[in-house]
Structures are given as structure tokens and as C-alpha cells.
Length: 134
Image (cartoon, rainbow, N blue to C red; front, side, top):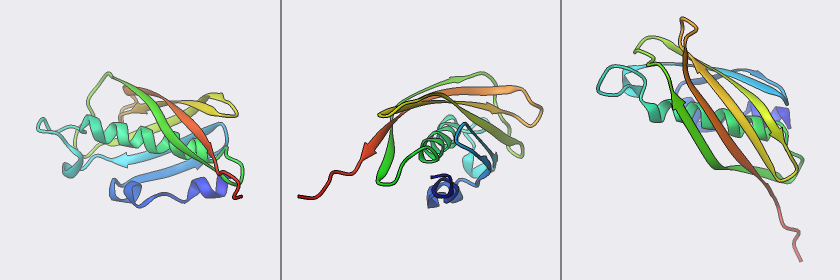
């Protein structure tokens, strides 16, 4: 359902996330770091970075779903390595580690404008299947 994955939720628009590539194996996105997304130190808030990665993981899983299926995040782990200052662009690449029938695991690498690794996020997506009506 790659076409479904290209349609982003209002939250991603609110966060200024821009999906730049969608395939079943890989997604990329960018997000401008604005003052509204910063913490008290003038850098991208960790929660905003995690939101970017979570949206990509869900979008990646959606690109792999069959009709009648949905997805939800059941686990997410983030390692932070470097801050991304206001005015810079967070670039994210999300790749599949596992694409199974009931779960998918995605890894999102987030870098700064200078290419330095800012964070690595690994998340598990549960595949939900609609129950047949009786």
C-alpha cells in the first residue's frame, strides 16, 4: 500500500515533516528544526526527533500492509548522539530490519545537515488485521 503510505497524517504536517522517498524497503524524510520544535538549549527536542522516527516507522509499515490491515507502534528505542540546532534540517532514513506477517521492525537513522549521526531509532510495528463481521 505504497500509495496509502504517501498520504501523511495531520500531525506530520504540524511537525513540518516532508517524506522524500517511499518504497517497501526504505523511506526518507526531512524536517526543518524550528524554534517551536526546540528545547531550552536551542536544539531539536528529543520528543520531536522521536516523533519524526515514529512517523517514518508507521509510514514504512503502512507501505507493506495488505488491504484491511493497519499498524501501530508497540516498542521504540532511541539512542541520541548529537544535537540538531534550530535552522538545521533533520534528515531521516528508515530501513526494514524485519518485515513479518504480524510484526515489522524498522530502524531510522537521523542525521544533521552536516551528515553527522544525531540519533538511531529502532521500533517494532504490530500488524493489525480487521476482524470479519459475523
